[in-house]
Image 1: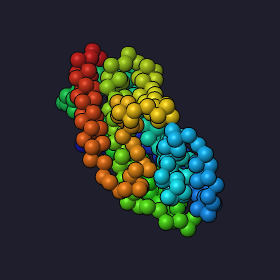
Image 2: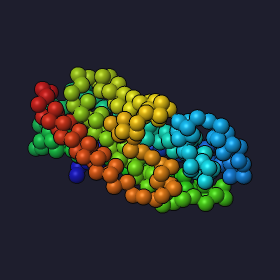
Image 3: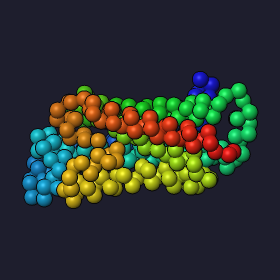
Image 4: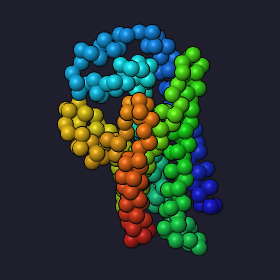
Length: 262
């Protein structure tokens, strides 16, 4: 638990800065939402777009609930990328930065295994991610209420849970890359790439109206806020797939770190 608390403290400043940036973005986007509630301009525009673009912009959600559709297009769609970038950079620093600064001689001299060290730091990172998602969705709900809107609390909590599962895979993948990277710079590039490249791939597949099965290759394909907001269906299948993927990636990270010369 000591290592876990130390890792949380090390991430605290970065976490606060990142949350502040996201919350300011939430406040800015929500401030324009009341105008959308009384306007059908977005729905009219949506009707003139190709099917792929309508799906990308929320489709039925934009038609049935324009405010939530607007928030999806302007904000909610990008939250896994924003949180994923934070997670990717933090994950890349869990091991590679210590190696660059030659601090592992001391840490590995303590009565603990490499597995314990890695899992304690990864556990702190996962806690930070969960807290960031919770802070973001609570800020969204609070700002919507301040604007006189009626937020779908249950729906947005499901969206936050689904997004957390996506960034869980992002962070564990970045930790694995960090465990095998030769220095912090390489690990940081891997962390950024693991967050950004799958997001761009998912957008490209949706715009190209390719088979939906292609989206499921990477974690962003399991993030579907319009469906969750309209149906309130718990994402059981996504939970099983993404938690299993995170477990495999964590095992790979532990195995790579245990075999690595430090």
